[in-house]
Image (cartoon, rainbow, N blue to C red):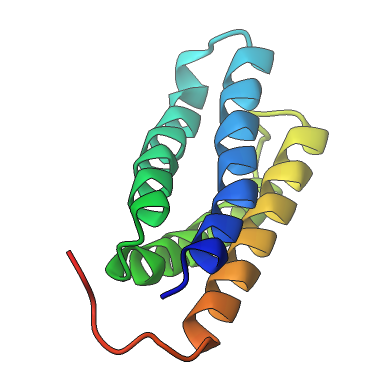
Length: 115
């Protein structure tokens, strides 16, 4: 896998990390918004794996982005823990990350996972 393709995935992924932390801060560090910190930490770990060129991290990232997109959309159905603008930004960052991951997975050269 070319490192530049995997590193391109990191940009919206880190944007999502920052937005999750901003959402937590904007809620006044409310205990009900602690769920925002888990994806931030998890996505940070994914970015390290992607930076190192670990192929299987692409698949795990794609699965987590799908879950994050679904979770963010579900947030709009109930009482919002974070401001609308932050949730929309998180949704867009997760969609961009998923798109770049799919693009990276479609590139020729991924034969088997590396550790």
